Length: 102
Image (tube, rainbow, N blue to C red; front, side, top):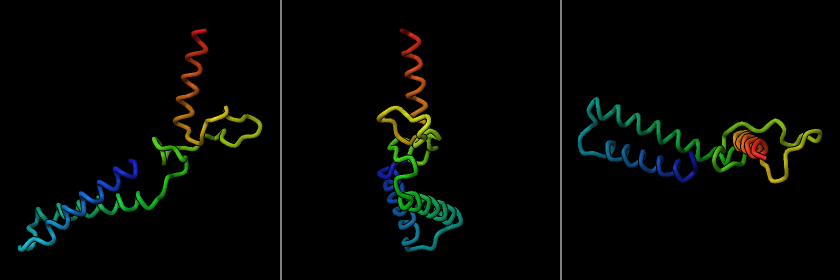
C-alpha cells in the first residue's frame, strides 16, 4: 500500500478503537474483538509508515524485489530503468512485444 493509503488506514483504525475504548460502557466481548482488530490494523499501518519508501524506490512496488541486474557493470540495465524488478520485467516484456512486431 502507498503511504497515503497507510495513513488513512491508521486514522480509520484509531477512530474505531477510540470510539469503542472511550464509550461510556465497557466493551462487550464482540466489541472487544473489534477493538483488538482495529488496534492491530493501526499498528500494522503505523509500522508500514515507519518503514520508509522501501528498497526499490518504486511508487507502485515500494517493497518489491530489486532487479538483480541493477548496478551490474557487465550487463547494465537500459538508461532510465530503476531498481524495481516488477517494473523492469514489465519493460522487458513490452520491449520484446514491440521487437516481435517489427
